[in-house]
Image 1: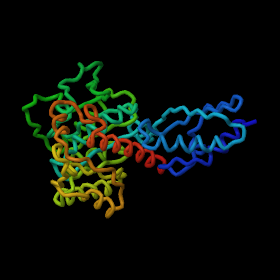
Image 2: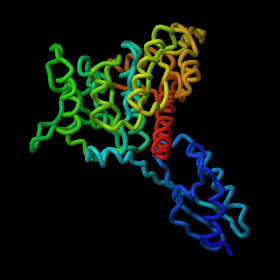
Image 3: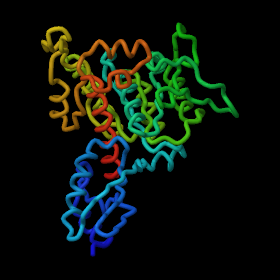
Image 4: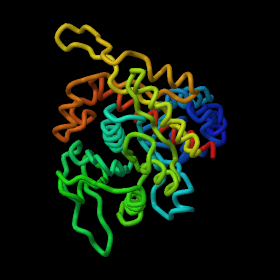
Length: 347
């Protein structure tokens, strides 16, 4: 007769593809039950946005089905996002992970990537906050279709809610046409207050949209909060890639892990004739990642619906999740979640 030890032994030969360790040593197996040849167990993923669920399930079932006497295998799923312990240890904030989204120059679609990444993670079942740390150009409220936050209570600000996200932005706190004319110390103070004075609640992921460049906001964030990792956004053209390399080098100098590079505004496919056009070039992000030895998270094609969604407050992953751009962004979100798990395991 098959017993729990037999099942664990079989599953100890199944590796988690991203973490390169077996499911048992990673404590990913629980609730094993054996009933007259029917075996069931739960696999606890390191993220609800795991990109390799189908592969893990297939391998786990095949391993257990090889045991003599097994007639049926049922797999259930749970998730437990690993915690970057520095958030609780240094900041005493209930955020498991912080993901910065940065770019070397403006106009490459960094905020679009940040917004859709956050929404896609929330769609997968994670608890997600989105902080608009682009103090000078806070566009997140427009892209999510929200224009105010709840009234403060007990000396705390409360984030707005949109598409399952908890959102805070300077755009909620100043009139739309009023510029922010601040020096570095004020930027530093504002970013710290977005962490300390906002009641975010418990979060699996805090996605932070940074301004472009390598200035005060990036330095303040890296010095104020332990960052689990950063995503660098670029377009394929050389002028954007050159600035992206500088931004990446800055975070490496600050010892922030590089989760990967996202190439935005990739190939445009004409909706009428189907002809592909590389308006900003092609493959630049992948070549940059290979040259620098960092992960390439994917390329998002040019699609007018991405711009339409951003202007109307409807992120593309909500209106066309299976289209070329929406599917690319959803896959990027799963790969980012996997990279966060890898980074945390390596600490």
